[in-house]
Length: 409
Ligand SMILES: *Cc1c(COP(=O)(O)O)cnc(C)c1O
Image 1 (cartoon, rainbow, N blue to C red):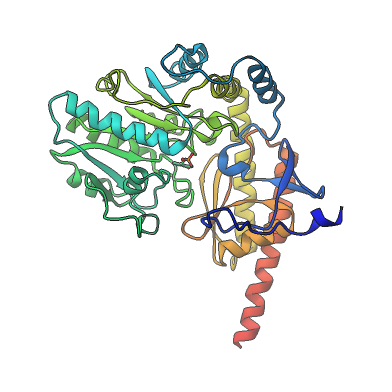
Image 2: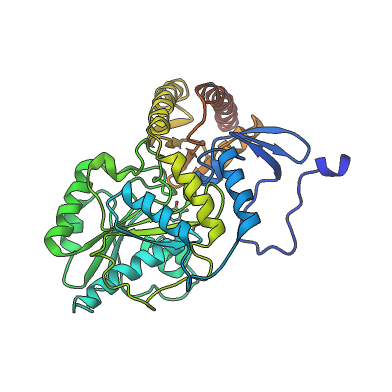
């Protein structure tokens, strides 16, 4: 049909907050997305680490269908049996004792921050309100989340910075030690930064921060919304360092594309969260929980996590080769597992277009990175295909560098 092959036109009626690529998809299967006119793309961004089991995973599709025919929504004033099931799964596999379910990552962060402050308040230390966050972090777009991350471009124009948020340098544990004081409630960090450009905290730093928190009665909050649920090749990234948090925000892969998040905590850290202190209309509703249970049952499988480590190892080796062959384009490979950052010498937005020209979808990232966030069940053959397409994108980027040199000469 001729009219569907034209690039989608930006809408007049959608708030203009996104710089969108002129592509629209109609259908997905595994790591493939198909446009309205039937063009196939290899999806190595997975809705920003959301569709971790690929598109249209049969088990998730069945879970939605079955639940959709039974019951969508009640209210949190009633018991929701699948909340127990999902919380049981999440707590059995983590440091946590309790969960609060949300509809998004940012809401899980809100709950984490409120839980930390309420803990100190309930312990008789209401002055302990400060949340220490790090440069390059991303915790979502609610006011508290943007204040926690401190990213000035996300704060600008939205009024004065909120009190109770302090910022530290990524990787500088000594400076962090000096910042922790009598008004500190919690430290919040992503064990592997996502939007910031796939920067991984060294294991030794996470252990040092855990110890600092223990010594000062500070709560440690991890944001594993992007790096959690198998993305790094362990169920949660903190397992690599063996430095568990007190509170953790999870979302993205939790619903595999259905909006659901969770705030996990130890029973001690959650001790201030009593009836009436927090809530959500939709959070943890029966439809979301049915998908969450199906998704987590798959994500905890040891063979899936082993597969992530294997394919991630392949990517890492191949990308290192790409960096050697295209030194004018690729300057660094970073991240952990299948949260892969490729730092570029050429503009990352342009590179994403070169990749799209090859029908490969990748995500952007801070520090002029692009990120590869493929579905965790991407096959080795698909990984090989992705590397071939990336190589061609590098050739195209290399050609623009060469052209600019000719132009400048
Ligand atoms: C995506 C993301 C968020 C925000 O999640 P939303 O569902 O968009 O609110 C927070 N933290 C990290 C690390 C993320 O990657």
